[in-house]
Image 1 (spheres, rainbow, N blue to C red):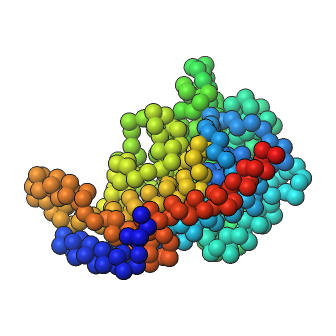
Image 2: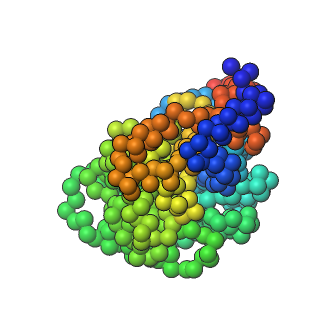
Image 3: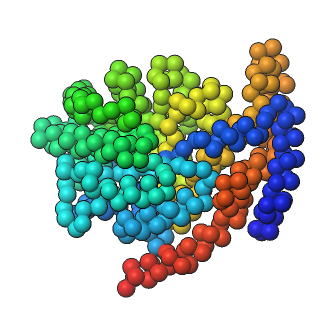
Length: 429
């Protein structure tokens, strides 16, 4: 099936596709030029099922669940870097890698969360510099004895709050070091699992404590190249009724404190999309962090695919000329399939959605709407769904020296046979 993805065929298909898009006033070359500049932050936790590399590990908690046991998952940082590098080799463009604090390297010594420091991520910086990619960061406020009661920054116990406040401060320092060493902006995102399964007697006090804790974390000016973000959620496993850091809480906090609000596609009601919210929120904030995920019935973090939700999100952002105001990061984990394949499917799907949006004849659609020609507007929006997007995408892959079409699937199979199968045998022995 890879025979059709040769350079000659890809170039001839693209030439014809350019003509078709030009007929509706769209310049495909310009669209590809914009797409080539969009950096997507690929998340580390898909590669090892949110396990991390701490010396003392606690069981996964905070409402996080990884289902499945596909053979060959990364067991250490070197293996995770090996797998991520393979994924990056199949993605057109230069992107970023998104790390959690639990992915530190401490040479076999126990380092608690309030002691994590930039030096524990030196190897990650060296690796990123070699690949010419950036690094983003997340504090890890879960899977720890001091998060076991379901509360961290909003905990009643002041010593526990102080522990997590220090962790948040150190996360920002690590992110600042990433920015300094790699010469790129680093997004430092904060999400906590705090909440209750059933009705709380007091919804007010935990949110007051959370606001105070956040203010302590963000008190120090860490520099303009670190983008602090706060991430809300509708509910989680074990916090179905009450989440301290709700979407409303963090939206208000981000606006009042001038932080990025992180909008995760899975952190709202099951039938609620975030694409309608982008134009509303960007009226009042300069930038947004978007976590690209795929919920099914709940915040299930399925592998991202090019579906209507993703297409609508990309269209809203491009129609509002807001690509320079959005930080894109993927956020999903599926242990039931090849983990590298999951990464590649997710990131390439987001890139395809962005390309489709960039190839939209926005001027014609707007002209029809502004002149009250609703039928014509709907008609051209429907016709665009069968335009030769694939030909433009394949050319983008070819021009970035990565496999086009389905030909990357063979690369995943080779990596599984050569690398992952050996790991699986070692794990069994």
